[in-house]
Image (cartoon, rainbow, N blue to C red):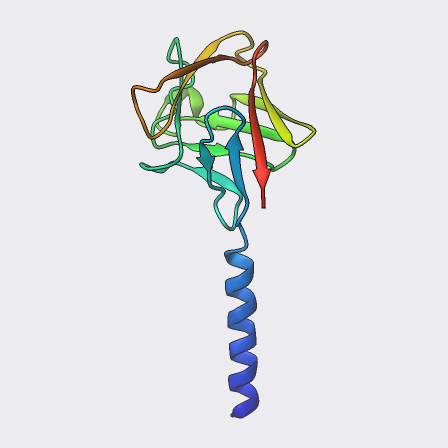
Length: 140
């Protein structure tokens, strides 16, 4: 019984430690916006407090309660799960590392502007992703 208890405690500890090891935070180079990866899937999940919503100027990449996936294979996907045209990661973004920063570049909508909303809604920032890409720093 003692061995079972010790094994159970160890297994619980490693499961908990593995599931919640996502302590890395991604910060924008300019505004210091913190994007918190999901602890198990390393997705950037929608959050009412800290994670920005990404909205394309012409509405093609409306992101409202959607998912921003990162670090799977060097690409970032932004899509709205509720939009029929975005029923999958069809809005692809390249993720490139340059020094301490990661650069996000739009592929499908190259040259389009997106609005990034942080905690302060009126602090809107427009970014032209092909010429002026967002830079994010990964801190673990």
